Image (cartoon, rainbow, N blue to C red):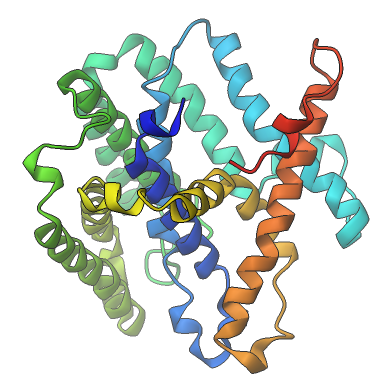
Length: 334
């Protein structure tokens, strides 16, 4: 698909998601200012929104063929990470570990989502609202009756319950993509709701304040931590208004600058690999030049992410039925 046919808003959202997720993992690099190492939950829902949006627009076909494409996109990079780990970071993993834990929670989570979304699209495409409602109510039941760490652990940390919240945002992306493809908004974002930029920014800031405000109150007052479940509502708002902002006419102006558009698409396209390699690259050795260390660290991550994807593509082509290697495809950045 050419640049003119791309949904530019999705590229920008993926770019912002990468920045937010990476920033949330930089707590040690912030030193005494680690309160600003945040945004991971927002970045996650933005990414899952984009995944749901694009997955429901492509062809479907048989499940094994369709799921194989998902595996071919994700697992070559996961395997490449393990190869890089052997040479750069001195860790060694067997194949069972690579398949189950090689991409941390994110890869396991999204591979499960793919299965669910395939069958939803195949058999329940006209019932997305019902499925969304059932998933939302199931999340509340899980939280109020079975989740045991309401008062001590944030639901967006190392918990399985957040998988439900992220799946809800993936369903939201699927619903938006389907609606826009039917009404002709997919490429040309001329509808008025996409161009109320300042109003959308204000609503997004209100939702962001509510999202963080509820968490801060709960952290300082354990009795209020019980109500952290309701942060998922402003999180939906953040996701939706973020999308509307990125669909505004200003997007076209941004993409009139080739260097900016190239950078956004390159970083957004490396989102998986940036997530995979970053834990092994973070260092506190540059903390004395804070906040410049944050930018330098991100610039260090980018070539390693590109190398991870390139090795993954090399691995993928090695075991394909085609003869030789397409080096341009292996090494391309965008």
